[in-house]
Image (spheres, rainbow, N blue to C red):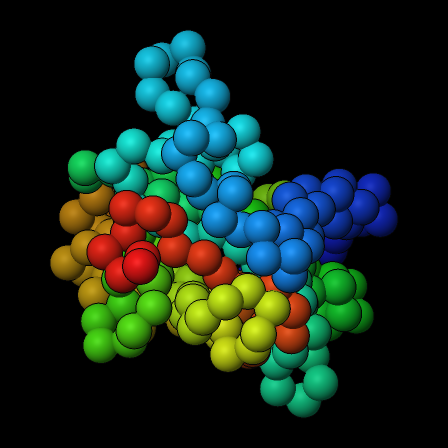
Length: 216
């Protein structure tokens, strides 16, 4: 089943949502990313925890990753990614957005609707992975796994990302043990929708949050 065709208005809305990723990129290039993630810049929330005003990620005892930017993929393809995901105790939350405007001549906007798992990628320094459900051009719910590597200071290269959505995720060996054991997920069968890609960020990058085990 192909993804629904994205309309111009919906595409512009997605582009607007990805401004959040662009903000992180610009701050990082100015070497101001530490300001975003320092807990003393946070403001109190009604629920009692502290939340960073700039990035909307809680600062207390959380691991997480945030950032984004333009992605260069094989055969000259281009996309843009933005993510802001955190984990506290046994709960993961956040947002993942991906936009490939030239995909199959119609454009593809992918947006997370459920974040189920955030964790380190085994054997990959700075590697983190996010599992959950995504919509495609505002419709459907498809399994996804995104793997990002925070490879150093923002804007200095080396940051990479891969994304699988839909049927390619069913081949992941961790699927049965992790996602299908999660009460948020029914038993999934092939949907006919497949998206799989990987690339290198040509600007910006990813930052691990202060309580992440690998954060200096």
